[in-house]
Length: 141
Image (cartoon, rainbow, N blue to C red; front, side, top):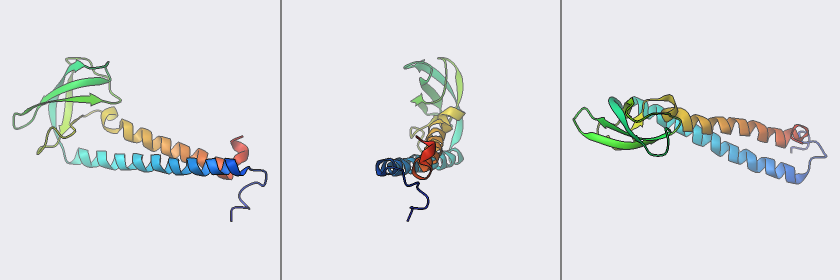
């Protein structure tokens, strides 16, 4: 079936690894895409509050943030991700009105989109390279 697309000197092992890599790439791509959709829904269904970084747990990329909801509830949570905050810095926080402790997030590009876009980008790149390893093995040797 693929005999016209695959050069005759390509080893079966290279093709098998290319196919395995291809399916792993699809998983990365789909997880990233799902994450992007979830983040978009999160942004649409949350409200904004002013917060403050109360401490750094493990450097400026792992901080604890405190904010007060519109109903007056004080919430503290840990924020990780592609962010850089110092203790005492003011931040904007997105949270669900009906459950503010359910995964609030700093309103920063890295906090909201960093992980999802990274997975999506890795999926796209690895799909391209796995395609090359399966159908154009002369480029991957």
